[in-house]
Length: 506
Image (cartoon, rainbow, N blue to C red; front, side, top):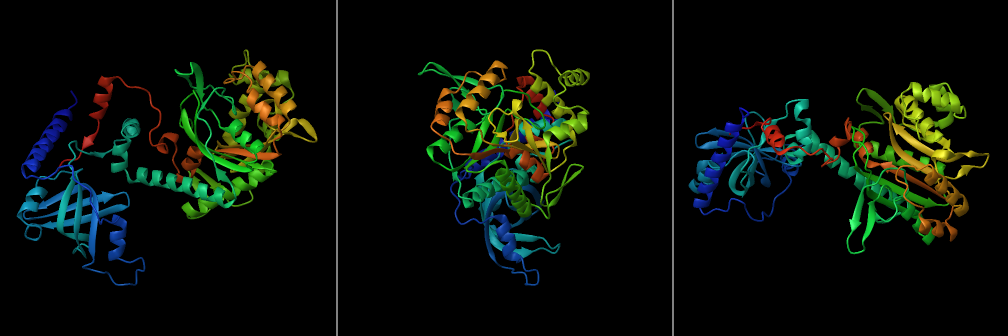
């Protein structure tokens, strides 16, 4: 047994004993509604105004609620630190101020308990803003102790599995997820101001489409039919363009039954948006404006650090040709099929039973993308790997598509949308013939929709998780998804891993 397990068991036993004594005092250890509270940050600001030249305001009343993070006893007085999601504040409890009964309750409190406090603000001799408690109430008794800290890489996965403990103990984690929320909020506001409407499309689809990926399959019992968790909402959003909704966006969950890495999670968040009478140049301008506006609000300036890289988000962002980049880093023309396949074999890229365009694009991913610190728009892709995209007028083998790269990651993918139903059918049939992953059958209803006339349009998808990674300087997608997908652990292993945590003692 792990040497920490007996200590952990003892702490839980002590807490259960405290719980029993609290119940004997006829108090509810799991609290009631608590009215009149204010965020801790607001209470701190009430004492010391943002204008530093203004005098401190001692004696200002304050009512807050939060989780106890430390307890320091001094006989008939005590200091507690409590925190909520806006900050941390010290609480001063004095027996002759709160009375005998409440002081008995204080003696039964543990780290991790949640309390509500009412009192007055003052500053201690050490200069710390503190609430002198007039009264307090127990809102929740914590029966398990909190982890003191995380010990290096061996506990990283435990942070993801026990995200609630991570948020309590790790201020940076809380900051990241509040920033993520702000990014989503500001993104919605950005598109609303541009005249877009937010819509919802099916997450369970009879035919997966809009991207080439292996889908998750489920079964609807009543209808006795297989359904697929969506890999992209694209084909449904284009139906809305046909229907006359000219500017639409959806912040959506997508599911791809593929690998897991620092850049990939099987369940992820994207924003997809489509605008009638636009093209991929419109989408580039819109994307640059959106991300720049987010960075201006969240970061000190537009030169940002991501790991060891520095990204300059000042406009304009460069636009570079896919074909030119392919030649620069591979030394080959895309059209040199024999040489390209030989190069792929040298790079240990799988070529058997694989379409040529997929092999060549694998070379692009391996040789080119690691050089794209960005931000950079890679534009004008081969038609063969872009079945939903309109061809360039002067070269039908090249399409009006771009991908945005930042920090060597693809952040966005956009097209001038193909709205010719006859050409679209040919492209999708060819994709199906190549047996692209995720292809099940042709979406005849989508093709029927195009036959009724879809306006020329630009469309794009931006990966929210990766964008949050960059704007919060987090190296792994698991750091920006509250509950990332993780492998299942055997029960014995899970119990052993829990014992790796070092717990706070009172």
